[in-house]
Image 1: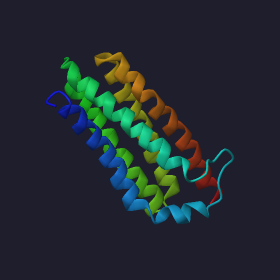
Image 2: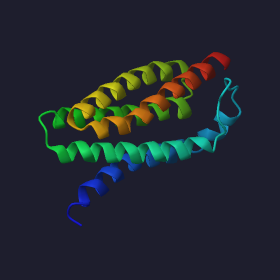
Image 3: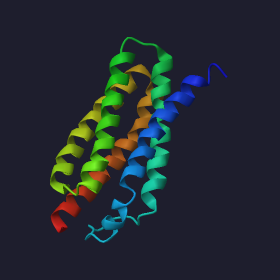
Image 4: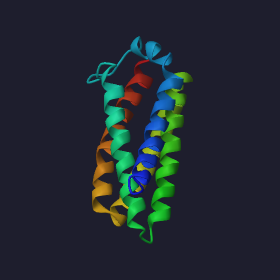
Length: 153
C-alpha cells in the first residue's frame, strides 16, 4: 500500500481539481447548452467523460514524474500545479462569469503552461510526457470551442 499511496494522492489531486470545478460550474452548464455553438461542438455529456479520462492521465503522469526523483522533478511538478490552477480558474471564468473573450486569453496561457509541463514531464519520464499529450490536444480543441462561443454569442 505504501508504494500506491503517492499514486492515489496524485489521482486525488487531479480528480479533485476537476471534480471541484465541475461542482462549482454545474448550474452554468445549462446556460452553456443554450449558447450558439461552433461546428464540431460535442454534446454536453462528452465533456465530463473526456475530462475524467484526462484528469486520470494527468494524475498518473504527475505520479510518474514524482517517482523519478530527477533533477527537474520539482520544477516539472510546480508547472503541473500552476497549470491545474489555471485550468480550474478557466472553468470559473468561462462558465460562471461568461467572460468568453477573457476566458480565451486565459486558455491560451493555460495551453502554454500545459505545453511547458508536458515538455518538463517528458524530460523526467517520457511516458509521463506522452500521457499529457491528449490533454494538450483537448485544450487546443477547447480553445476552438471557446473562440467559437465568444464569436457567436
